[in-house]
Amino acid sequence: MKKLVRLVLTLSVYGMLYLPMVILMLYSLNKAKYSLQWHGLSTHWYQELFTDYDLWHAFLNSLGLGLLTAFIATLIGLLACVQLFLHARNKHNSLYHLLMVLIIIPDLVLGIALLVFFNLIDFPLGFLSLLLAHITFCLPFVVLTIHTRIKTFNQDIYFCALDLGASRTKALTRILMPLLWPAVLSAALLSFTLSFDDVVISYFVAGPEYSVLPLTIYSLVRAGITPELNALCTLIFGMSVLLVLCAHRLSRQS
Image: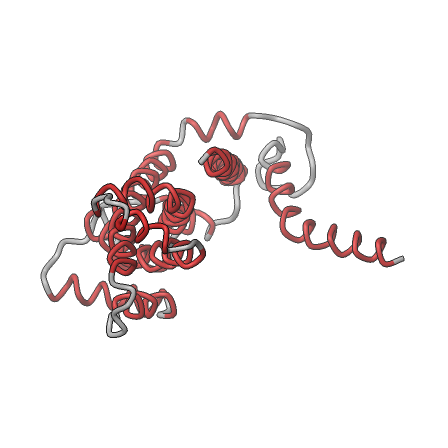
């Protein structure tokens, strides 16, 4: 009886998580455009999606922004975590706590604060403002992910390498970096995901001339959900699953 209850609860949880995505995928293949009734299978909406210039332009903008944000935020976060590791015995080091404050700040407050800051320094809103804003809110998550990994392994390995004659650079590249590689990869994927689907902060700092996919979808959803959006979300979901599988494989190999 306990096994049956456990099975039912497990299936219920997975159903709540993935059933909406399954329904979305099915309706992306529905012939009907506005009706929720099933009118048969069709790939027509995928063909329409590939001819929608505005959606693909916004998608490519978001993809480029997400990749660049992930690279820069992960690089800065990794350097910050190495600095925290090297000065771990300094009790007055407040860098980590200052970064963690950004996690608990609501996106609405952070978006307005960034908008006010850009206006004060007369910084034009567009790609660069989006990039700086996304790096700002992704950086704490990168530091949290990598710093947590540092706390889990035996840090004496690094200092033993120094005692055995290794230079600090060699100890960092040969000892520390291989141990941090899975966390660095996870932090990069997390940064890309956070940047790619951000709506609130992007709404304030995007500007009128640079379109990103979340804001484009948000404006289209006001008029109703169309099969093209279902098809687009299905492709994005497939891309996300592929990234997770690749990251898992690379982590196991490392």
